[in-house]
Amino acid sequence: MNTPVYLDYNATTPIDKEVAKAMTPYINTMYGNPSSSYSIGINNKTAINQAREQVANLLHASVDEIIFTSGGTESNNMAIKGIALALRKKGKHIITSSIEHPAVTEVCRYLESVGYQVTYLPVDSTGMVNTEDVKKAIRKDTILISIMHANNEVGTIQPIREIGEIANAKNIRFHTDASQSIGKIDTNVKELDVDLLTIAGHKLYSPKGIGALYIKQGVKLENIIHGAGQEKGIRPGTENVVQIIGLGKACEIAQRNLKENNKHMFSMKKRLLDGLIDRLGDLIKVNGNQKHCLPNTLSLSFEKLEAYTLASVLSKDVLISTGSACHSGAIEASPVLKSMQIPVLIAATTVRISTGKYTTAKEIDFAIKVLAETVQKLQNKF
Image (cartoon, rainbow, N blue to C red; front, side, top):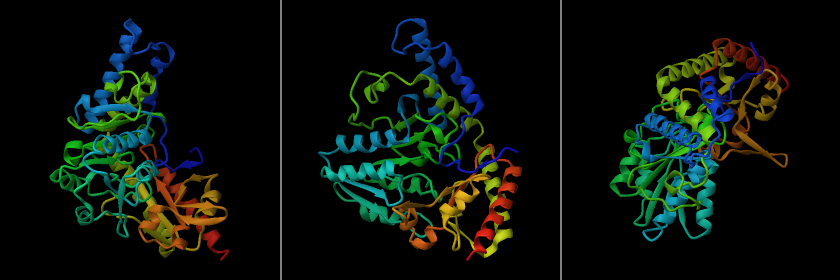
């Protein structure tokens, strides 16, 4: 077994070997510009269209509803700013949640600086948005609701379908950032009842720097990038052919293996949690909504153990993420944990562990041993 064991799949994923193989010809020989009229350009255009179909199939969308971007951040910017600008004469009120990724919250902060108003919905102690709060926040000038599908830190899955029904009934555009849910749980855009949905390729075993935005047929965005006519003119610029091919293949694999991967990631997460509870018992607090949670995500707090110290000591053997940030020597809880009303001292002890489709039982058993021994060793210092 290779060490360190990687248990931070929510941060990024390795590139699937099938994805790398699909990309290779477009690195070595298929270098033509897709807008060119000769064969190596035309072939690349055909390959892009195939990738678009692969993404659409995963989402149960139409091919003309998929726009390729540089990643989740651009997709979120394109969706939120695009709707805000397109509907500014109708209203300037946006609803989002207090636990969104910065790729959403920072866009909203920017829009506030130029005259828009944003309502940041609270969440309960498990990180769940209350649909009644959504209803109450709606105003006559509300033009957009943006709520993530699943939280990247604690894994809580939001009631997207119910929020979609609320938005639809009020003729309000609805966007969801599905960067963390794609390939882990079902993301059927028709069942979710969304107008816009964000994909980040590097969470899906394809390369970094590629993503997509689903835009429901009939939904109009105002461009935030201007140029030529690529991607229906919505996202102009010469296409990133190599990585588009990679994303398409990754989506094909995700659709093919969704149930298998979901079951495997959950079994590895459960094996890890059961093993840690067996070894550490009450020293562990599990955060998030365990009934409605991503199959691979664990947010754990360890009493009296500073998360950065724990992650640092573990890093030669096991790679995990922390749930707090350190600024100028002071520990600051993440906005997600703050919104869940988790005390700062507990948030400072919180780590995120996320399994993936490549995680093995042997790796999990090793991680249980190392993590439990490290926690006990550090606890003994108090």
